[in-house]
Image 1 (cartoon, rainbow, N blue to C red):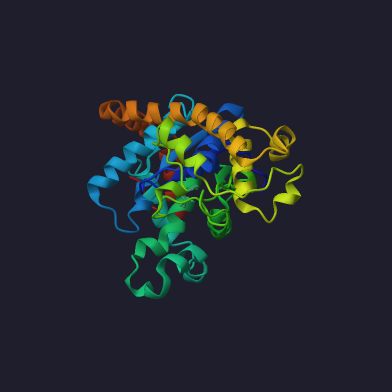
Image 2 (image 1 turned 120 degrees about the horizontal axis):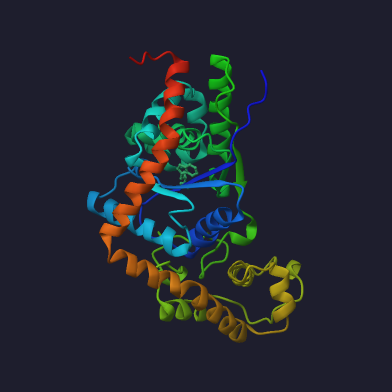
Length: 340
Ligand code: TRP
């Protein structure tokens, strides 16, 4: 069968399960903005509320977190005109294609997902069926748009491989070239943000210590305080990255500086080698406040206007459905569903 040409299209999703950190900004949102601005791609970004409820979510928190995530996307630079920005549950085609994929994916494939094994743990009997099926719905999110590129973190690589397996099996079983084999776009090490208190642990919204993270909602004061109090060591900055291998906290601050300034980590050392952390932290704090405080200010402003956020999500869902509905209809037809 002739190779099918697919429109270059980016899809990615973030769960509205509350608490956005600098890690979400640098590791996901900022990269999403870059892809939006790069041209050459249609970009589609989704608040995956159906994924969030695979574990318990308080209903009013879920609504608030979905709107806050939308505000975060926009404040970070996602333009709801340039990109399609919406929440998953307003586009029923995700769940519909997800069902077809539940019938394509094999129990054995799903049971091998490390995230399932980690999250269900020893108590798999009591995990939701949705948590087990989670990666098939994720495949549907991507493939219902025939997306070709998927920016995700390292932890989602296995789910992307499963998405490719599902697309290939569907194509093979029905003798079609219908779904693309989507490419993961994995984040580089420099955008992996670690805890400000332990450079070997990922910065996390669930760390009990708020000082371990910068939240996207933190104001200028909080940002600069947290950076000044971040764990470091007494040595000056070296001239090569190699010398930071055994200094994870130092390496993390260099990475954060590089990502915010949009330069290479080595270039940060070129500028600051020999400096002590007291000094470097002041430079980092100035930079972080300049880049991040406008985002939290804009988020706070948007959160005052729920009607505006809901309008944006509704409009995004309409645009998403224009792409998803005909693809779902073709998939139903391929599978043998009668449309009358
Ligand atoms: N599983 C992803 C995460 O937790 C979120 C997600 C859901 C996603 N559907 C997606 C990411 C589709 C990329 C594409 O980070």
